[in-house]
Image 1 (cartoon, rainbow, N blue to C red):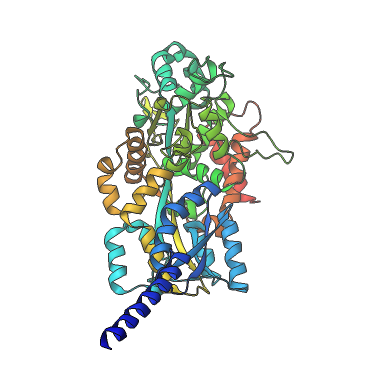
Image 2: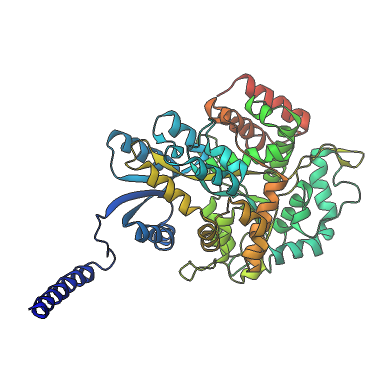
Length: 502
């Protein structure tokens, strides 16, 4: 009797186990049979970048927490801001958005974000303070005492150049010393600094070195160029026009010559650093040594070469030197991903350096009368939560997961995104084994140490960008033939434009 009862019991348990196994096999990715939750992630990225992030980062977290993520992409951070406005009007399942520091303040002031600190424990916030670079965390607070966004990466422009082009200029520019001196004398009354010699590596370049090299490239055949036009032509790029990249490039030259945040925020344009920067730009344009946009019907200047065109021209070996971020550098090089689009032919010819140190074109006792520094703006990117986020704790945990050391290293190696973690900064020569990758990150981190900053809010809030663009248009692009283009003349022109702002 007992044996019969035991047999029936075991048989029943076996049937139940088989039913359970059938249920598991019907949905093997969710053996615990809990309810799967779905969320959307919004990022400004190309489709290939978004696919990589989903497969290599998001799916790992999703599988561990029984979640499903759908990735939306946006072409710009303006589009991200518009998507946040739509989310505020009609909440959905949006969990995290990719945000940059230039749009973060607008998003917070408009009530479109919820602080990620709302979903974090004190211990988790303390861990962030330990792990992430202080400047990145500071910007994540958006001027408050509360963490609104978790920093993910940063971007800073450095110089990318073709080694054979730099070597060509270094070996042969002396043959044109008299012509270069004459071009400079028309501006500073003297010519080259006393005992001038072109520095061999762009790491040591200043404003004079960049002009000498660019003048040489613009006036000589380029045997190092790719198939196509190897004749004399401009070989460095100047972004102009009224775009975010062009504004960043313009203000970079001001800061490199020694301008301060207070001077820029005050809208001054007749001070020595800005006059020096404009004088160099006028020289570049007058001598025809830079690629730039065509004039537009309203008398302005086109956008010149943008980042996409820079990548194409360098990949074709048509440019010799230009500023570029680490991400753009990976694109130009070809990167380390098997699915990355092809980059430049002979990527070993690429080199990276900090941007040139700003010095005045005007000389005193045979040397630059004023000296600035190497400077580049640093842009920081974040994960942020929309105001109506359904699960703020989950949003913080995901943002924190995506910025763990291992995942951030993997992302840097695949996409060229500059890490914002202290441990990766301290150990990048060990962690990134490929020499070209080390060169990119080394130039970027040295640039961060030598001179970086953020564009003052007043530039946009008070429309100072319009003033600076107007001054540059008057001095650099619309100067009448025979204008002296001295520092005194440029300062007078700047004051005239400032007295009658657009």
